[in-house]
Image 1 (cartoon, rainbow, N blue to C red):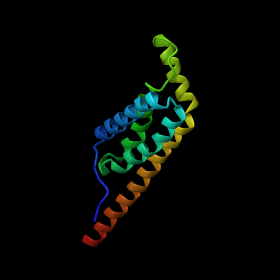
Image 2: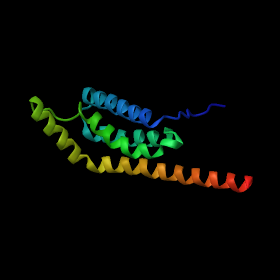
Image 3: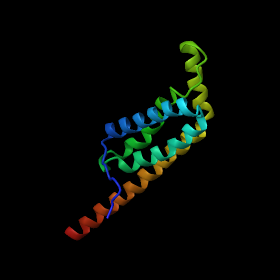
Length: 132
């Protein structure tokens, strides 16, 4: 029977995973499609995977690292107006226009982390009741 992968990433590992995947998606999107909307939609499953794969002890890092990873991956996708200031303006514009997707992905990560945390606390409480 085939099983889904179940990696457990540390807080740093989840940040590196999410940042690297978003940067890769940003480069691929800029090469193939040059679409901020596609990049933003692809951000949502990356948020879910990050929140599901982070270790139980580092759950609170997932909602923190996903918006940072969105900004990192946005670097190759952002419109380049020429020079550093033009690229910075493209980055700020991309963050502003795709804020809904950014908030949505962060919300997904936050909700998944809350559900995982509630289940963890319930499991620990049940184990204490069985022992004591």
